[in-house]
Length: 209
Image 1 (tube, helix red, strand yellow):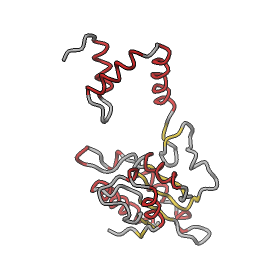
Image 2 (cartoon, rainbow, N blue to C red):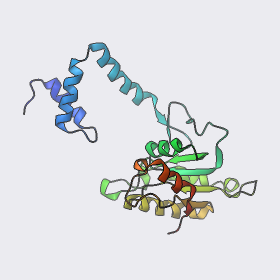
Image 3 (cartoon, rainbow, N blue to C red):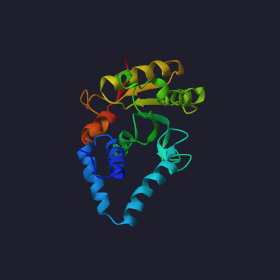
Image 4 (cartoon, helix red, strand yellow):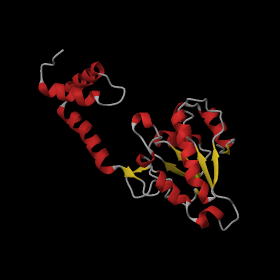
């Protein structure tokens, strides 16, 4: 069905480009915005332009932040000897909500998925390897071994990514572990209940291929 306005057509197309939004839903949202007063619509649009201009990856872990470093990396109390590798911000927030993990993070920005055209070069793999490539960090001056925890989806893409990372990190000598399989195979981390996620994190195991 042809819409009565070119501007509406453009707005619906843009709204429908968002994941999980079909054209019917996009049209409903556009009609709702048309009912709002101009000031509220301007504030709505400005929130997203400000978001795009002001939010950037943390220079250390690639978490999202408005500063050079995210709040986790800037926290001197966090354990610098432990890095938890997650797919994206949603998984980081799921773990933080537990209040159990006190280490640092590394956000990959996705998982390896050839079907979707996502390869290792599209992720922050090299930044992770660089973080783990410091012999002083790996060996430690306190005798405690450095640890990298894989907290990745238990999907085929997640397992492929974990295997690739393991091979990349193997020469560094860092201890690599993975969260226990309380998370069902095929599940995304952010959809797990808190008790299951906490158990998986606490009972993590040495990563094996």
